[in-house]
Length: 280
Ligand code: BTN
Image (cartoon, rainbow, N blue to C red; front, side, top):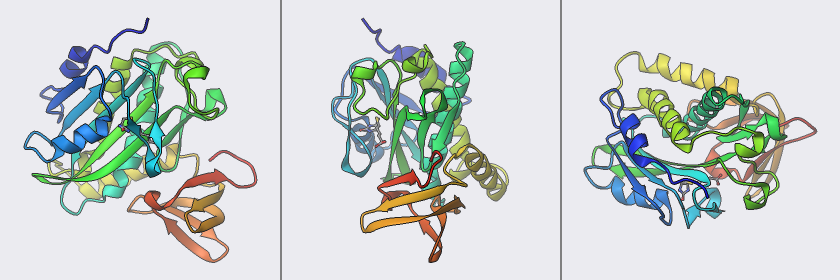
């Protein structure tokens, strides 16, 4: 029998004076945490609100796909991040992936099995230890908050699932990689790191915004295994091949193709795959 999430612990660790997070709503079961966060976004309590559940029954994925998880086996959380007017919102999904990769690295190391997560652009976290299978999914949605623009960052992490409980062969869970972690520790580490990484995109930021954004971009590029690879980009209108050479200031993938240098926004791309070997 899997244990219930200790939401009191998670709230106490995140809703503190050194964190921007303002409140945490826990549901033993809910359709989609992103849908609930989108409802909350319009209210005065919206900014920096977290929605967490033990059992997401109608999870949504990118491009209209579904995200299915058994009760108490995974993390399903949505966080409402308020942005400064004009901030490059396209970087939020990428920074969320980086925050999650770092949290997985640190929490699995503390639990005695240090996994090596890598990022596939824009934000899939792949685990090198299990043939680069995907352990998480992040769905970011732009919203309008009473304070200005914002993003609902919805994150699912496969923690305890068995192979049979995963929907596809290319997915894995932390437990399948021999990492036994508490879901509470992982969600706390992730949301603390997310708050730190998105800080330069928010109104509350104090310091050199451009320099801080450049640092975040450089850290992402270092963690992203797509950059430097031959890739095939699946677009609704057809495929493009080339070499992924970087990410632009808006979070789009920059690819050198036979027709010249092109950029692809995450929302337009169905899939990025390695072309001619390698791991994307
Ligand atoms: C993907 O397609 O890879 C993204 C999956 C995102 C799933 C998460 S689980 C928490 C949040 N609520 C949702 O309905 N979806 C996201």
